[in-house]
Length: 466
Image (cartoon, rainbow, N blue to C red; front, top):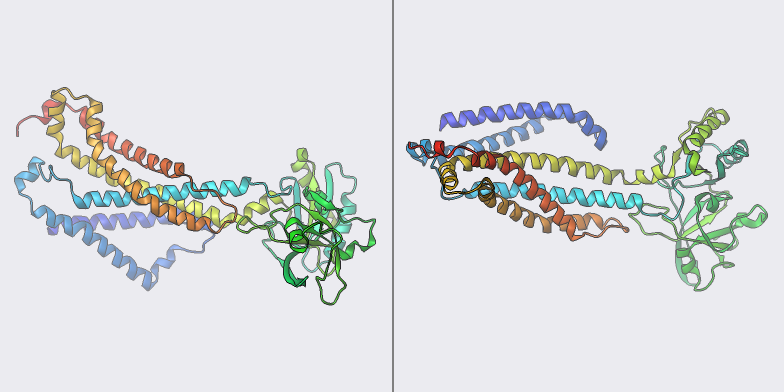
């Protein structure tokens, strides 16, 4: 008993040292992907050392003491013959196998669902042009309207530039990392109306390819447009059952009602976590222009970017150029989801590797215990395929059981996670079926390696008398 336990302790110490070494190698990549400030030095704190010691002692006790006591129950002759527990499968062994593959299948399902959702939000049309529009933050503490006016003059006549405009709040998250929102509430015809306010400049709808449904856009031909607004479809439904164009809105208590001159098509100006809220576009100079939007020709994105960057540095040498495509900005809204997907993928790979190592060890033990049975079956005419299927059958049943157990848990977890998105995928049955098949395929490949070896062994050796 003491010898077996000492061997187990030595193996656990070796595993701990190897684990710390591997963790130190992967730590930089882990910190970079998850934007974390953790370090190996954190393990040297008293609480962490105490927790590690407790886990180490528990694992060592569970993996060494119980098997040692179990072995003491068997006679030496049985152990040397390899007939220990050959008839009855170990309940603890099977339970551990089911738990391992339940976790593996669960992580595979989570990985597939998060990957599908991220792919969906990246490919879903948002209602505006995000691939050909460059967003540039204006300088902090500067007059964004003046910067827009000056830069518009600088780029005028450039062949790769289609249109230029400005806005108060960025679409998505740009290189400056900031996001802001202005929401205004007012009473209209006896009910409360709340709307997001977006300060824009001329050619905003044109630059983003947003469709105007009714009325007209802001125009330089109308000096009064600084006191007019455009509203999206959802806002128009709140203020009028018919056409909202021509409606006057008491948006500010200290100002005259503001006229609606146009209605534009809804677009996702926030992430897909949220539904499209009522939106009002204004040209109110009380809101600053914080971002300059430049639409370029689709066949000259790289050339136009370099040209705009060069012109910006020449025009505003004191302001850093932090231009980014709107497609990049929208993807940056889902950084947390991408990190979660990375965690699931990494965890699934680790869990599968650990499960396969355990399954490999179990299969080796079973093959040794059933060596004579395999030899007899071969002598009686069983093929290699028959023997492989026979030896794999019990393990595959356990893996299938693990998959069935994991499916309800995975469905519940992923349903809760997807509830955070207004625009989301559906949890299709094939995601679970694919996860189960993948788990079974991995398990079968692991078992088959040993099964084929045992099935192809010379039966004369296995049937030789003791």
